[in-house]
Image (cartoon, rainbow, N blue to C red; front, top):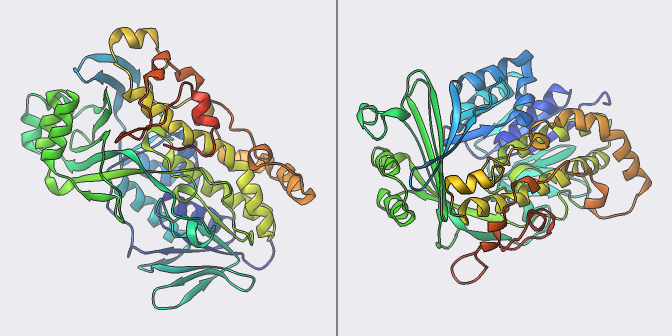
Length: 472
């Protein structure tokens, strides 16, 4: 780094923005974080971070931040149980143990990371809505409501799936597509009525956290309970034909959830948990797909999009939040190692991250269709033991984002400086793996993209992970 601190303007205080701000601050830069909300949000329900992201949190303050996140969530689960819509137990997997695997309430985890950002000196500009991104020869930053400008040396847009930066910085048209699916989701404190309900009492254990997964035609769902059976969160992914407008998130209605559950033939435990969910805690969230971008870096090479703004994953990737955290740590290292050469840093960052994130992003459709377009029975699972699984292969979990950035920066920087030619896929590091082990012959039965159903037709995982762009 030069003697002058690099001013890093970051938009969006989700996990991508917070992690980028913290990592930049810890590496001697001045991070300015701009967020429309007035402070840390308690919103959200269930969120998981596997060890590829967890090791980044664990690296802060000698593990203190990671321990706080870990202790706030699922710490006492022993297994994850898989059921079909007839409530037949299909398989039981060991729940991953270790202090780098985090699952629990998004709002609680967000507060812990937000507070640490404040502690390390990140300059917080909360309650400030961005009106205009600035990426000119003279200005790099944003104009906020009221007309004030926040300027820096580099601009990182971590402004989520409804990213303004995509249109203003990358000059892209609105590219959202209704995925044809939506999620009902809820988080609440377990009541006495819940604990005494015969259908639910085994979910509220004081001595063990519970993680269960159900799968059926065009539907799958998770139920988690933790904190000695006091906290519960559930998510239910289902077919949906509603049009997407300016808002993708609405208050949920219990009668709608019951209707979808009945259509799918889901077991009574789901109806009971929905009935005991406070209606004010029920959200109906439309899942929106965006085609992969051809670049994340602006034409000036001083601005970049990361996280959901760059690659908005469907939940079935099981890696959306983790990819955002990996992005954030990587960009901080690239900025540090570039010694003030921001265009070099951002181009190297993109080449480190592009193929890995793209492959995992694309495979979320493949995984969803494996879950939804097969009739799951004990026999099917026994014949295809690697298909009904969480898509968490070793090449995903063992990945060390910081080490990868440190080890590959110089070579990729040399490629950038020499003007090495090729597509971004050719210039970027390999993804590191694939999803072929999950493939199942029955996935040829996918619904085609006609009528009200908007599903991609794939005969193999190769189509899911190599197509660019992928239409659904």
